[in-house]
Every structure is written in C-alpha cells, then in structure tokens.
Image (cartoon, rainbow, N blue to C red; front, side, top):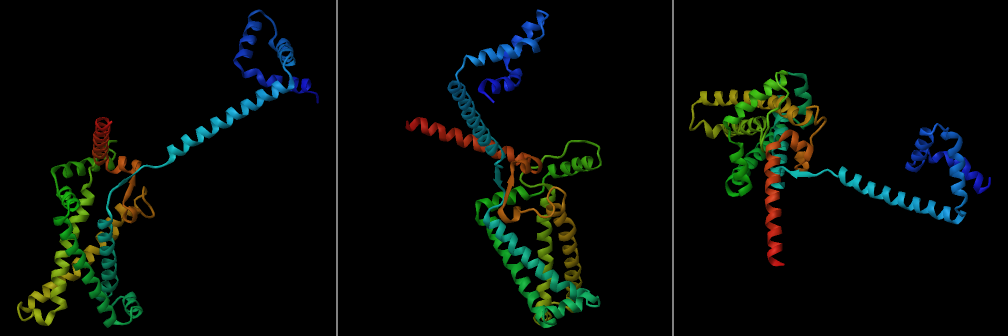
Amino acid sequence: MSPVDSRQAGSTDHADSKQTTRLYNILKKNDLEPDRYLPGLIDSALAKVSDSELEALVLQIVRSNNASTAANSQVSTSVHVEETFQRFNLTTRLQHGMMAISIVILILTGLPIKYHEAAFSGWLIELMGGIEVSSLIHRIGATGLILVGIVHLFYITATRAGRSDFIKLLPQPKDLFDWIQMLKYYFHRTDIKAKFGRFSYIEKFDYWAVYWGMIIMISSGSLLWFETEALKFVPKYMMDIATEAHSDEALLATLAIVIWHFYNVHFTPAKFPVSKVFIHGRLTREEMEDEHPLELEEILVERKRQNEKTSAKKRVNS
C-alpha cells in the first residue's frame, strides 16, 4: 500500500480533530454532505506533506505521548503512596508485646487449673509437661506481668510521652457523650459518628480494665504463690477470697480480651483478620480520619506551625 493509500485509509481517523469538526459544521450548514467532501479534502492536504515530514510529525506525537504517560504515571504513583501517622512508639509497642505474651501464658496455664475436670485441661497440662511444669510456666507468665506493670508505671511518670498519654487516657465527660453518639449511630438514629481524639472511650476502657485486673491478679496471685508465708499474716478466709478472686478475675479478663479487645482491634470488619498497628504503631491517613479525626487535626495544625517556623528561620538566615 502506497503512502497516499495509507493516508486515505487512515483519513477517517481524523474525524475527532477540532479542525475536522469545524469543516464538518461548515459543510453541514451549507447543505453539503461532509462524508462526501471531507475525505478528499484531508487527502489533498496530506498529499502536500512529504513522507519524511509526516514521519517526523508522527514521531513527535509519540514522544509527546510517552512524556505525558510518564508524567501521569508519576502523579498516579505519588497519589497512591499512603501517608501514615505514628500512633505508638517503640517503647509502648514493646510493653504491649510483653504484656500480651505474659497474658497468653497465664491463660493457657491458668484455665486448665480452673476447669480441671474438662477434657481439654488434662491434655493441655500433659502437653506442657505435667502440672509442676505448667505451674512453673504460670509463675513465669506472672513475673512477666509484674515486670511490665513496673515498667509501665515508670514510663507514665518518668517520660514526657508516657505522661502525655496517661493524661489523655483519663476519663472525661466527652467520653459519655461519645458513647451516646455511637449508640445512636449503631442503631441508625444518626449518620454522624462520634469524633475521637488520641484515645476513644473503648481504648480507655481497655486501658483501665488492665489496671483493675492487674491489681486483683497480682495481689491475689502473690498470696497464693507464697501461701505458707502469707498465712502467717492473714487469716485462712483471706486465702479463700484470694483463690476465688484470682479465678473469677482470670476468667473475666480472658473473656474481655477475646470478646471485647480482639473484636474492637482485630476482628471488626474494617481490620479483619488482624490490625498491624501493634507491630509498626502507624495508621494511614484514611484510618486516622475515620478513627481519630481530632488527633489528626492536632497533628496537621502542629505540622503547619512547625513548617511556618522553619520557613521563618530560613528567611532570617538568608
């Protein structure tokens, strides 16, 4: 096929150009058939352009298209890079990890004792090497819980980040209103969710439930651990109370972790099957907007203030 034939075959592909549209409209207004005249006019115009000139024009179009595609690709890539915000520092994550390990050990070694008549209890105790080994592992888990409690008390008193978080974890009247607002949202009485700051009422409940549980578990567990020594200072009925308190609080803590904490953090549809924030401590911007919009606003305001401060320093130095 000759260049002229090729041009003629592709001439109809130019029908979308602005120039072709203008010519089409002129012919139409003058009661002439555009399909009859336009192909011949376009072929006549292309015939006056040499093959080399036409090839150069096509190559220029290709280069321009490639550059535009690359630019769009860069823009698309930058858009899809998720901005993340640090929620929990390494120290907090290590405390959480140590506590999680300790609690899992305590549950696996404690429940078989509480429900010693259940079929799984004997199997689990045997798997761990017998009741003596199981009891030793239980005490190791208890020691880990005590240590993480001590470390956390030091963290919230001796570090700025710890003190800041502790103050924000204190219950506030807003938590009650947030709870009411979320009840309305869950029962479809409103489309507006409560806006949380750094910690929601759910996270505060989790936090203070741990304090309550640790006080009961550590105090009662210590009496049972050192029963002989304890009986020198407390009556026998106190040991019976400690036994019941330790057993019942252990079950309550297990249910709270499995049903309350695991669902709100991991099993909720938005996070299932697991939230990785306990590993890297970060949330995406979308997650922050949904879960902690007030904290996000504070972060952005502080970021803007820091940027303005930096820009002012640069102007002064220049």
